[in-house]
Amino acid sequence: MSAAADKSPVWVLRSLFAWVALVAGVLLPLPGADAVAAVAVTLAMLLGWRDLRPVARMLLLLMLAAALAAALLEPQALARGVRNMAILIGLIISVILLSAVLSRSRDLARLSASLFGGRSLTRYYSLTFGTAFLSIPLNFGAVGVVAALVADRINGRGHSAGTRNAARATLRGFAAAPLCSPLSISVAVVLTFLPGLQGWQLIGMGLPVAVLFLLAGALFREPENDDAASVEARDAGAGPWLRFTALIGVICAGTLALSAGAGLSYPRAVTLSCLTVVVLGLAWGAWRGERPTPPSLAPASNELVIVGASAFLGALVSALAEHHLSASLALPGWGYPLAALLVPWVFYAAGMMGFNPILTGTLVGALLGPIWPPQAIQALGLSMVCGWAMTGVGTPYAANVLLLERFTGYPAWRSAVLWNRALTLTVMLSGGVLAALLTLWLA
Image (cartoon, rainbow, N blue to C red; front, top):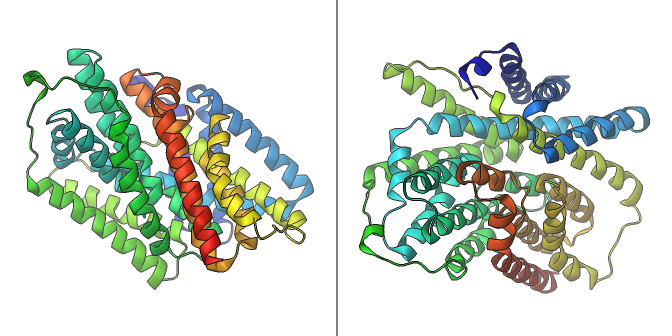
């Protein structure tokens, strides 16, 4: 995007409306704040129409049509959709701002560069575990940071088995975040629609699965030659890693204090924790003599549509389903293990058709959460985050896959479906079987 575009009235308005949506999302306890957030972010989406991908345009048009129908036929469902949209828009914008502020850090640049050192296996594990670690606070920003490093290697030395494996490692590292990151939208959505499930239970189950997933990824990569030219050491030192770890700890502690101590919903607790770090980061930069310029939110049009429209549609459809089906919806005893087995495949199939996991997760949680055996609710949560994670690594319309394509030039279908198909199917089958067995055991 050119500098002229950055200063154009439409560009400025897009950012301004996104900021209004964020402020309204923070002030949700006030009457009408959710409606202000929804209207403001919708205007930002419409102003960014020219920059939207086809899938995002489809979601935006579907959201507008559904909002009109709900306003005429089911106003209560419309209100629920608006509130859910405001909550998750606040969450995604706060994470985008956190990513933008942290990307200016010298520590982050040193950490990213250090991930490409070592022999092929060491380099692969450094990239995949490093991306997973960076994804805890940075979310999609971690893909952008590491993918930029891969792109630099491609520009300097061309495509190779090493750069292709690096792209695989980047995608897989980010896909671990939906399984166990306390700041992930997946965890927020699952905990919202499965109120009997505690955050520590979900993360405690997802973390071992994420570690096994990252370790198994090395079995699904291209062979490389460990010649002398490929062995490089760019050690970042202990300082940057310790400071970055401390920052993640502060965000997680703030989220826990606001959700468990202050009684806020999990998404709002994450939003406020991230924004606190953003404000402190800008203040620290100002103290060091830097100009504390808030990042522009205009480039985030696709992310706003994917998250906002999916959140709205998911809440809208789930409200209608609960109203018309919940009284009679029930599964036989064997139906719950079967559902736990199939949920990851539902996520994956929807992702292959272009639907964001937020929409799928909202529908699955709203439909199955109320009727699931309370003593086995963690099994449903595990099944949902497994499906969510594999949708992010194995479907071509996931936002992180499209972001990797933008940096490296590797087509989304190739990097997601062809490179990760075997690993994705293995994890979905294993996660579904584990969730089914947990359901049988706990229920």
